[in-house]
Length: 67
Length: 260
View 1 (cartoon, rainbow over the protein chains, first blue to last red):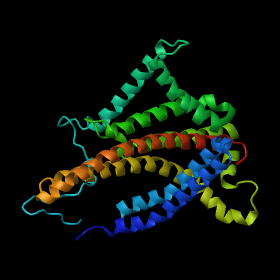
View 2 (cartoon, rainbow over the protein chains, first blue to last red):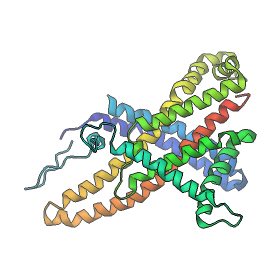
View 3 (cartoon, one colour):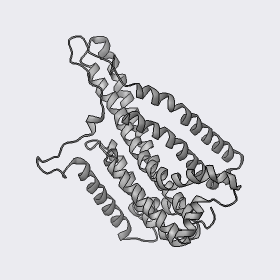
View 4 (cartoon, rainbow over the protein chains, first blue to last red):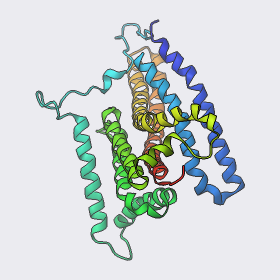
């Protein structure tokens, strides 16, 4: 069995951004559920936070391929 | 990679980066690849559709006009007006072409017969990301002046002085390196990973058909999974087009804001 350890490392590294993304959208959903009219205010903030958290996962993906 | 050789069958080669290197359609014409043709096809489809949708505009819209206006109002009201504030109309053309171009190119990845997206080659998302990079810096410099704009990035107001040691390098890296880098990479990586995922299930299912009777019975599940993931991919493609446009609008809004 051969393969690249990088991919396993990437799998472990993706846990962090995965939890972060889950927490961001959990907060967004509960915010909208409590106050539905705040949706348009919260949506860009939630997606900006999601984009930042996902950026970390993307760095991991690049390193998994590059190294 | 794991050796998945079946008894008496040929060896399974897992799909990888090599599956994305499409040769030129005509030998010797290096620019004439499927990837380039898909970009021109996307431009053609978008132009024809929106010209046809807006040509005979009437108060009671036809189905075509309605669908064209639906996409337009989604970008104008849902993205531009909510995020950019009173000056949003200037940026609607850019955001709208960005959204439709990315969306049509993304959806090519699951259109039967095409099933490839130019966004799976890293150059195309990065070209778009560079456009956004130039736009939001240009807007910021024009609105605030070069010195004031750079000062706003490096020294965010309302922060205790010692924090600047930490904050300034992070902010500079965010504005000049991380934002364009991740903007292009996010789109590319999602499209790339999605195509790879579909390849794994479809090619894997095909390979199982060459095995023993037990493996042949399993292979339909691989194909069903492949079909289900195709619909999942459609969702991802729409979401990525939306996120790309949303982030562009957010970055422009950040440059427009007088105070950070």
